[in-house]
Each structure stands twice: as structure tokens, then as C-alpha cells.
Amino acid sequence: MGVAFQPRYYGFNDFNDLYDLKNLNGSSETMTKRPFDTTIRTIHLIGICGTGMGTLAAMLQEAGYLVRGSDQNVYPPMSTFLASRNIQIKEGYRAGNLDPSPDLVVVGNVIRRDNPEAVAAVDLGLDYCSMPQALHRFFLNSSQSVVAAGTHGKTTTAALLVWLLTVAGLDPGCLVGGLMANFQQSYRLGRGPYFVVEGDEYDTAFFDKGPKFLHYQPHICVLTSVEFDHADIFPDLQAVENAFTQLVTSIPTDGLLIANADDPGASRLSQKAHCRLVTYGLQKPAQMRGKMAEYTVGATRFNVSGPQGFEASFNSPLAGAHNVSNTLSMISLAHQLGLNPGTIQETLTTFRGVRRRQEVRGEPGGVTVIDDYAHHPTAVQATLEALRPFYAGRRLWAIFEPRTNSSKRRVFQERYATVFDAADLVLIKEPPGLQSIAPEERLSAAQLAKDISKRGVEAHYFPEVNAMLPFILSEAKAGDVLLIMSTGSFDNLIDRLLEGLSKRSA
Image 1 (cartoon, rainbow, N blue to C red):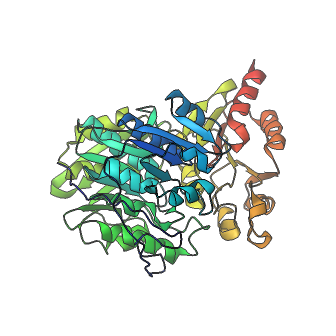
Image 2 (image 1 turned 90 degrees about the horizontal axis):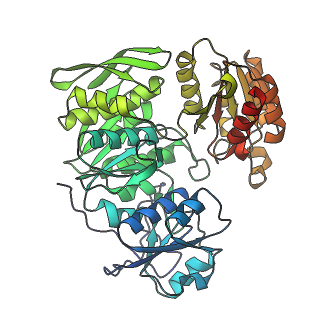
Image 3 (image 1 turned 120 degrees about the horizontal axis):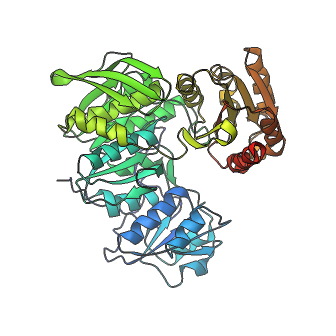
């Protein structure tokens, strides 16, 4: 049975009060706390069209609550997803959106403290909370929380854990930061004892600057990696490590931490845990050790040895060493739960992946177009190195849009130049939204293309997609593999490219 946790529900009277968690610099400020009304029926979400908020809205509706919300600049796919479920969305933020008064207001982390709707919620004395608090209150506090956390790989890892528990007949609930192809959605409520959630280290809300994952109170936690990221909220690596240290030390003594021994940050911080620790890895000594990995066209094969004489060989449809590492974390949990190698192999054989993680979108005219979410330098390099043997003998393009708050800053300028060596041709687009960043802090995409070329890899810079698209359509040949990496829509590049390639081949 799952562990029952007390709901951590809070309201406050002043925007200057903060949720009682230690800040990343180690200081602590306390806010006024009062329990929410336990008779909740109607829930209003401010910023409902965010990926996490929209998914939460659907989960709450499926759980039986009356759900509505508001957002600005509403657009598909989330707007159409919510509309298909008859969830009302009010355009723009205003006090009137809260009439009639809901029992609870959930405030998205994109909402600022001067947002008129958030201000009105406080003035009206309405109970409110953040998205992670709501997830905990309604879905996690009656289950054993299984949190997949880390700078890299947490989406795929979370999806693998969900599918393992599903194949094993344990009917898990989950919330994952990507559309799981096995379910064609990013969540499920489940009736079993486990709830899997992707643990994001980003801050929670304007009134709670602590990391989201601290609200998930993991009983089981997978820690894939700890590197510097999110330069808009973390000043340095130490601040990132402080956040993950809080996560690791929050696991109860009867809980379990599964940590990547190959990642220096994850390995070091895992030693601070007060719970049982299981390590996995391909390179460093670990309790669950992958060895003799073979990366071939369309398949990955590897052997695993572990505690209590565990020995098994597995075939995986996932490309690359980083995905073997993600899989080892899943195998570690399977072993701890007493699941046999046959269940693990069935999980891998039937796992259909996650949207935008090495997702093949089409092959018009023999040109393979792959959509991937990679953005951090480590992830970009790992993805390219994974696809090289998977598509051996074919020309590999890397088409990259630096879009995140970290990737469009100079913090990774020099490192980005070193991570494209596995590609045959690199196209770099000017990052969007640079005007919000001080000129001296901006990434130079043009300089990046020059630096990549100096390493012997052909690279080109494009100020916009309208200039990049004709180049691709004129140069791409049958057999080429186009890896398109962006955390956003990339100005609809993939759909436009698929259409253009189809017309060209016709």
C-alpha cells in the first residue's frame, strides 16, 4: 500500500511571505499558513494552457472536479486539448474570471505577483496553491511517490518507470513531461500503489521559489544527473546542487534512492541521502552494472549484472548510451520490486517512447526527419552520438534552435561548439527572445556556427526559419537523417519541412 502523507496546503496574506522551504542560498523565510477547505468542488487554474497546468486540469476533471481556467494568447495544441474536454478557458487575466468564486485557485509558475487575477484571489480570500502543491494534495498523498529527477533523461526515465509498472500489472498513476506513446497522453490516474512523476527542479510559483520536486515527497527517487541548467533562476552550479541536495535528503529513511554512478553530480549528492541507496552505471562501479553494450543499426543490446546474482541480457529499441543508462535505472527499480528479467524485456520490447524524444516524424523522399527535445550541451552531444551508429552510413544533420533561458545565453557558448562533432552538417538558428537578455549575456549563434566549422564540421547560421527551410529542401538527399532539436515549435519547421519534402519527392 502507498504511504499516506498529510496535505501541504497553504494560503497566505501577503505576497512578501514565502512558503516555508529553505531557499537555495540556505536562508529560510516563513509565511502565514492555514489549511484549505477540505470540501473542494470547483477548481480554477490561472495559466491553464501551460503544459503542466493543462495536464493537471485534465487530471482533476477526470478525478471528478469541476475545472475551469484562464490564460492569455491561447493557442493549440493545449487550447484544443482542453476544449475537447469541455474545460472552459477565459482569455486574459482579470478579477472577473473568478466569478463565481471557485473553492480553490491553482496558480501556474508563469504567473507574476502583480497578475490581476492572482491579486484578486488574495483580495477575495480564496484558497490557492501552486501546481505542484495541487498535484501532491489530489494525487500523491495517497500513493507511494516515485520521482524521476535530474538535469537530463528524466522524461524518458519517468515514462520507462510508468510502463514497467504497467506491464507488471501494478496500474500506476503518473504525470510525465511529455506525451507517452503507449498511452497517447502524458498522465494517467491509476489505481495501484505507485504514482510516478517527473521531478522538475524549476521554481514552483512567484510565492514559492523552491524547486517543484520538493512538493512531491518521493518515497522512491531516481536521480539521473546533476549539471548546471536554468540559468534564469540558478546563479551557478552550487545553487543547482543545493536544490538536488534538498530533494535527496527529503527521502524518508525507509525510502529508496536510485542514482547514476556515472554522473559525478548525481553520484556525489547521492551520498547525502538518509535512505537506502542503489547505484547503476555503465562506466563506474555500481550495484546494477551495464556492460558489453552494442549499438547497431536500429537496435541496442547490452548485458546487466546486479545484486543477488542478477545476470541478464536485454535488447532495446532506444538508441545510445544515455538511453541504456536510463534503462538501467528502470532495471534497478524492477529488481528492487522483485520483477523478473522477462518483465523487463517485455517492457523494453513494447515501450513506444515519448513524443519529441528521438521521435521519427516522417521519411518523405527517403529523408528521415527526427524531432528531439535536446537543448543542454550534454543532451545534444549524447543524442547525436546515439543516432550515429543507429543510422550508420547515412549523412546526419543537426538542426538546432537554442531556445531555453540557458541555451540562448553565453553560459554555454564555448561548450556548444564542442558537442556537434558526431554530425556531418550543422544548422544553427538565431535564438528567439534575445531582446529580453542583456547583449553581453546573449549566445551568438553566428559565432557558434563559425566555431563548429573550425572543428571540421560544416556549419551554417540562419537568422530565421524562412531562410533555413529553402536551404534544407535544396540540400537534403535521400538517405539523409535530419535531427531537429528545439524545446519549442521551431516556427513549425518540422511540419513545413515534411510538406516540402513530400512535394519535392512527388
